[in-house]
Image 1 (cartoon, rainbow, N blue to C red):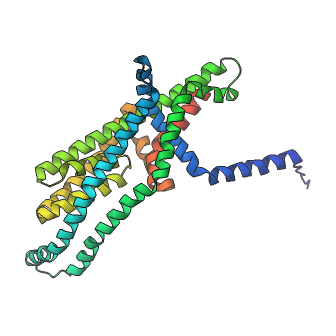
Image 2 (image 1 turned 45 degrees about the horizontal axis):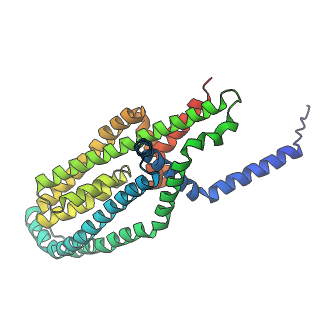
Image 3 (image 1 turned 135 degrees about the vertical axis):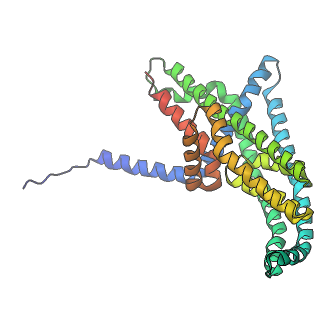
Length: 324
């Protein structure tokens, strides 16, 4: 029986050590990488406006400021108008729970413990305040994304130069620019698809709330549209204010709000999102659903939000790099 001897050179050992160190470093700065990628997504969304502004001689800084002020104003308006209303209505609802349960006892011929539901609903205002506070706690990250997106926009004409070394010298600049344009096109298509989804979900929610006669229909609908950026989880969170407001009208209206939220979520998951993403990015509905599920499994809410742009970026890089 012959034995085989495997020799490992010093060069291989050094390469392996540096490779592992590089992976460790990437893991340590993963939050920064995520911020840069989010900034790139924002840049692809704003870049068409920047190009249009250059044609009519509007400074890029002014366009970015208008976009940022619009985003901040929208978020602030929703939080300022909806959070106090939900807290106030929830407190009133807590006082009405014993009456609702007493009426249900006669219908179902059973007894309910009002303290269980009361304790749950009484904790909702504090949880909403924590959620709103958490949003403002991340103000530094939000500002970092704004600044990075602005400088990426300024650097956009030169981005392809950082990729020249990855292509053969013949037509390296042309292929690098083609790669940047392809990624920008795909991710930009995803951004446009997301904006369309937000509009559709927000409009459907608004119409449903108006038909049910639920107060604060507009801010709730805007919140539902914004949370559409978080697949699956977003619509569930957005359903809570609608159901709470519906319960303040009557238990039947609250159940109607629940049924409406379930219907919209089912339409979103199985029809609206896959079809719109197929039209915007060319990705098949089955692939879209699988990508979202994998993203949520690996990275939670953040993974679900970034799953599609990451997938589209990797797919585009592989396709463009393997072109002859």
